[in-house]
Image (cartoon, rainbow, N blue to C red):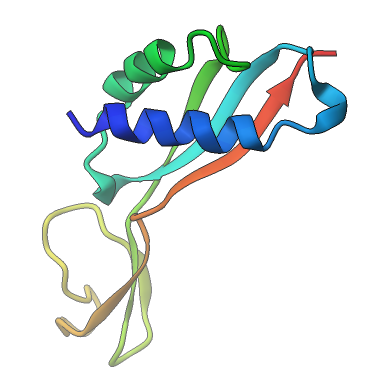
Length: 115
């Protein structure tokens, strides 16, 4: 389960991002963006986050996960599209020469702090 290691890194990054003037205020939510190609199971990541965030400033915070679609651009015709299935060829010109432009993200987007 690689979600545990990822959850540990999210806690580390989010904790480091807490502003000094917010010390002592509860963190209510950590917002992340996860690309569909990362092979992360959202429920498993939330479970691991709940475990590793205990006894940290993030204890009790929820983990909001925004899934990022897999998008590509064709190197030959420059067509951009969202990939919905396992076929990685341009739907316009059928070229296999494509570049992925999203879908592999794993970013801590923001943290929400109670007043």
